[in-house]
Image (cartoon, rainbow, N blue to C red; front, side):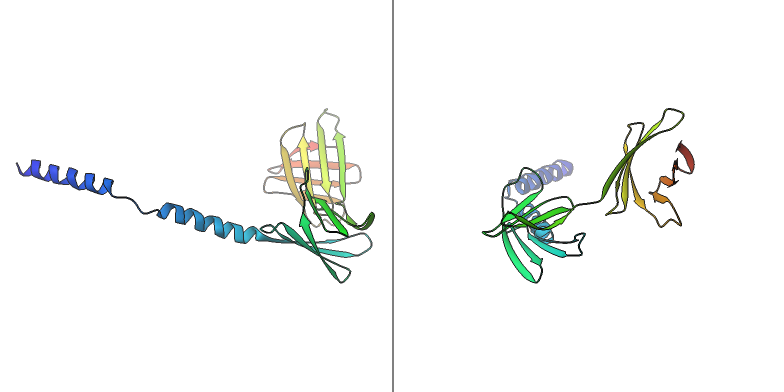
Length: 192
């Protein structure tokens, strides 16, 4: 009899608790998290220096859809426009276009600032018929390597006494002149 009374008591307590309206704490937590993320991503600043040594600093306000450009001692406010890819901002006098690290500032029809990454691509084939496709970004000091059309291998430049040296935790690419080798975990997987 005591077991039945305890069982009925537990079931009744559970039923009453399940009928209570739960506070909407879950929504508050989600909103707080989104707010923190939005604040962190609200402002993004980039700086580019063109081949003539001119400096362009851009501060993007992602919440307002605006960009503030500092160029030649002038601060230029621009509004975001719809673009197919990359970004596009403009006002009555200036237009800012960019994609990745590439950026162009125009005043009217005249390009007053332009920066493009120094990209070099190369494909090598060794005597065993293996191919090594490489895309070097000399601005960033990185290379994307594809061995025999396989997966992308991202490597970062290291200081070499001479020639080239790129690596990550698993791969290492070294070369000088016409000689080049790619190692995986210390073992040569491509040599030219």
